[in-house]
Amino acid sequence: MRVYPDQLPRQLSKLKPCYLLFGDDPWLLTAAKGQLIEAAKAQGFDERVQLEQDNSFSWQDLANEWNAMSLFANRRIIELHLPNAKPGADGSAMLQQLLAQPNPDILLIITGPKLAREQQSSKWFKSLDKDGIFVPCTTPEGAQFQRWLDGRTQFYRLNLQADARAMLVTLYEGNLLAADQALQLLQLLAASRPVSAEELAQYFEDQSRFNVFQLADALLENQQDKAQHMLQQLKAEDTAMPIIHWAVQKELTTLWQLQLAASQRQPLAPLYSKLRIWDKRQPLYQHALARLPLDAIEWMLSLCSSLELKLKQQGIEDWTGLSHLCLLFDPATHARLRAFGQH
Image 1 (cartoon, rainbow, N blue to C red):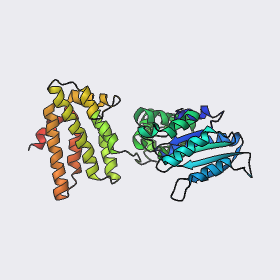
Image 2 (cartoon, rainbow, N blue to C red):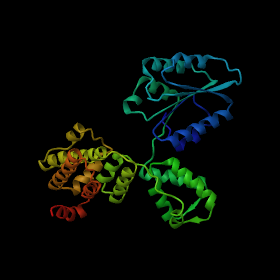
Image 3 (cartoon, rainbow, N blue to C red):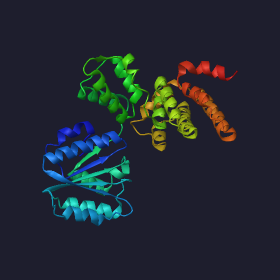
Image 4 (tube, rainbow, N blue to C red):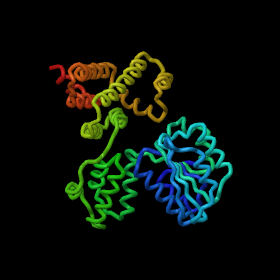
């Protein structure tokens, strides 16, 4: 059963035999695991055994711990970390075997990185998910991050003014650990009195983290302020220019294929399928196609090629040119920047 991190506390009054904590966010993973262990201790699970699937690990180790009698407690927690989220054939068989013979005195917590769709369709995962709870610990974005921030603000009983809340979203989106630490500091500094953005600026620096895929989504949605901010952060984090260039070029090529098909009155549904653009992401492309005509996309691709030549032939990282290219996703600035680029 899938339970999101903010829903987990409501599911811990009666524990399941197995919990699957997988995701890419360290804060969510740590918080979910901490809540789970605290609830388990309250229900008599006093001993913890920690295992990791490394080069010296044997799946028999897990079976031995599962069947061993505890010397110190009646009930035990077994924590198993899968660094690659792939138990393999032996691990898959062992996990299914153990869960088929549940031990009420054992609580199994399995942790690992974000699971791909095919991993969630595997036999071992479906078997454990059926008998346990899967907690996807993926970093929230956009409105989800704002809801998370609001929840933590209430938890610390802070009184943030609207501009302060907006600043925290800008500063810390994508970095829950830093955001939570900032809120803890505010609790010490401000308690329950109102906190403004002006006051926040005295305390905090920009620690948001983004990846090139989030940048691409912001460009498709024409969220220019957000996209330019992401670009600055990616540069500050020493993200390789070729990676960012690849992401932007990939989206432009996709838009060109879609817009060309639309201009020829071809149905886009088969092309969406061919390009592996699933239902959830199609509105992003539809929004971009509605504002960017074919000739505009072609001109942007030519600029993209110029940036690539600079990068590969001359070793020049033209961040200003890349910033201008991103601005061209906005039709309001497209004509002005195009004219500027022709001089």
